[in-house]
Image (cartoon, rainbow, N blue to C red; front, side):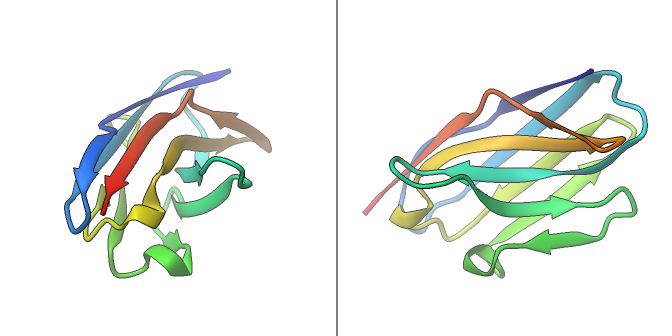
Length: 115
């Protein structure tokens, strides 16, 4: 089992920045992909960004050029730097990890962007 805990959400005005962190514990070894998804009220959960164990990133088109995902394998952490935030980025953000074919999720952290 892998446990994921997010931190860093909050409230920010449009154009501002936030940094989300996620720490993995438990059976963290052999984690392949880590990353972030988000879910706004009344909408389905959607990909934000993921990063493979070799550091290869993958971004949703809506966040390309504004968000940066990074990974610290030594600390078992994944980071999401979010710049130029817009009201449409408002959502609960969930940390994600895949290990040996199983998906793991954190409890989520709220990001609210005001116009």
